[in-house]
Image (cartoon, rainbow, N blue to C red):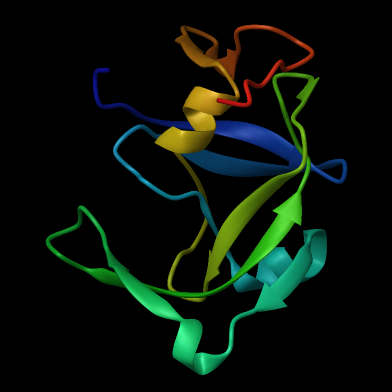
Length: 123
C-alpha cells in the first residue's frame, strides 16, 4: 500500500473533529483531553506506559492509556474501537490497522469505508 497521510473530519459522539489517516502509523492515538471527553478512558499504571518512535525525526510519543470510542467516518458508524492515548499528540491519528479493518478507501472526497455498515473479519 502506498504511504498516505490524509486529514479528514470524523465524528465522535456527534462532535466533528479532524483526524489524520496515516498508513505509516502502526497505532491509532488520540490526545488525553479527547479521551477523557469522548471515551471510556483507562490510564495504564506507570510501569505499563511506553514510548513509541514517530516518523518525525525519531520523536517519541508516550502512550499512557487507552480509550474506546465509536467514530463516524463519512456518515458511517464504525464499531467500537480502542485508541491508544497520549499527552504528546495534538490530534487524532488513525493508523493502518484501523484503516485496514474498517475497509477505508482514499477517494478524492476523502477517506471513507468501502462498505457501510462496516463488516469486520475475525481473522
